[in-house]
Length: 184
Image (cartoon, rainbow, N blue to C red; front, top):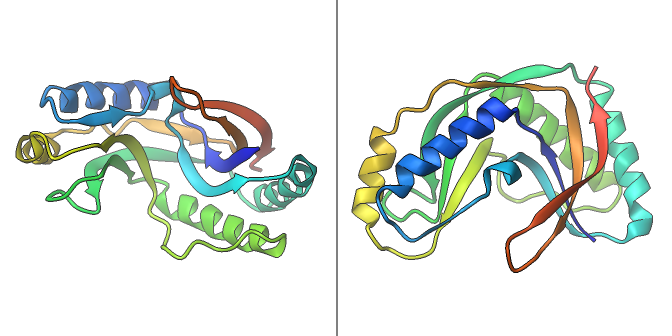
């Protein structure tokens, strides 16, 4: 089964991200938007995992969460990977709570490496993906819109680390919660 580890977001954060998608969508660029209900803060993508390994992943997440306190994140500014001149992924960054997110992601890398999941080669960049750019259509207007976009500093309480299953369908992915490891 296809799995990943992430932090879930409040409805208020999802509503703000949906508002931002609407503003960016006014540009009529060629973007495949992430459904707001599916937006999360990914800590680690695990890929296809045998069902028999799920318990050891759950145990690793419980070890991580038992040493971390619940905290709050806030939305920051928009951006694009690899950059605004050649955007492929549109995102919103995290301000408050960024250090905690990066610490938990680092702990996840360490714990999951112990049970056979290789570490990421790229450094963690705490962000929330809004959409993926499919072509260069209206690229300059999209860049302008991103630069002028005002992100409200909406917050979300982070109380647990979640292991998700991702089922790919023609209408987009469906995420199912497999486990929640509660932060202290």
